Length: 407
Image 1 (cartoon, rainbow, N blue to C red):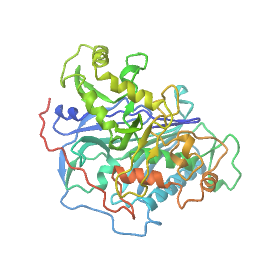
Image 2: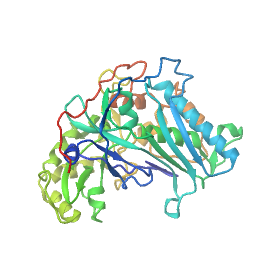
Image 3: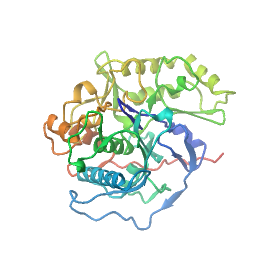
Image 4: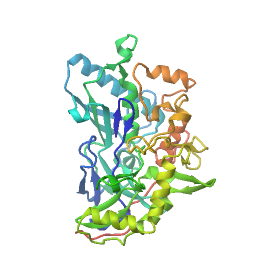
């Protein structure tokens, strides 16, 4: 995702379970977190783990499960501060999550291009893989999460789990400076924590790219479609989306139901001459009404919620960001509600970031919760599959059972 100076901007690409008809062992790689649209469809054959190397039980408050490789294009003093900020963020997350496998992050600190000058940073899962949830629906799981399930058989993993880039052209503040933050400085620790949690899987697949990719006016939202070799593969959702519900006439409707309806808009493997032809076909289907309903909800305050899985740390609905008009693919849905949670302990995953305010300030304002990662955020991470001390046994997904031919 991209974290901009005013708001976080996410570009999310995911693909439907029909995609696995295109390859025997599919994975989706995202080489550049600033441009997740430049994905690579990768064959990642299953491998067998004869010896699962889970890290031993340790005191989680002192163990850092994150290994950060930093490419820092700045002076040595600043690079040292950046390295410490990443290490501190890794330790904070490791206190909260009961991780079994190390998470490898490829981070770069450099000047961005002119078109990217307003972006503070961007982070994205390096690879997403298809796994079948316990409700029998195949979804995309970020590699960092998939590794934690310690599956004996799993698709081959990429070297890194998360890719991060941060803009060297902003004024950054570090706690180690031992100075009061200036009004034009951004606390680097907030941005790093926020971005890493997105990299762990705090991302929705619902956006407006079906229409914006062909320069059309936005009339609906979809979970991202797969269109390859001029053939339609379907719509898919991330594991995050499993727990999303749309509130309509006081009813809570799972967005997974809408994904299933949109899947029926075009028969799988239908060929098209152009992506524009495909887009028009989808929009002419009676199923397009579901896309319109999601857009309406995504731009109506308090209309999309995350309902945590059973027995997680938070047992109430969590409101997501739906106050922005028009819909903002970088901020809507993939964050908790700014209006409801900015001044609470769950401030970290709201969409806005302001200069001149430190992480310690937000923690104190939010009620001095034990971690900068608030209880609602923890519950979301537990729901998608991460273990914690209070939720040690999340339900494991499985490999898709059906075998598919290669192209």
